Image (cartoon, rainbow, N blue to C red; front, side):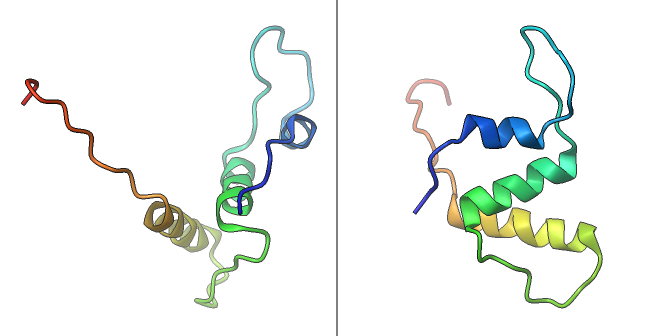
Length: 79
């Protein structure tokens, strides 16, 4: 089950500062870790045993894409 969006939580992950009308920036690794938590769950972990964060990132992307595969759109007349 997906979590509800918590704006305060998301803002707590962002870089501090006043960015006016724009969203505050977030580090890429922080963003990927948050997507992993949100989409795969708090209890997800990489079972490979690697200590290389980039390899864990690959596993995260693979798991997210495996669970949330897009359905092909049918645009009749465009192809």
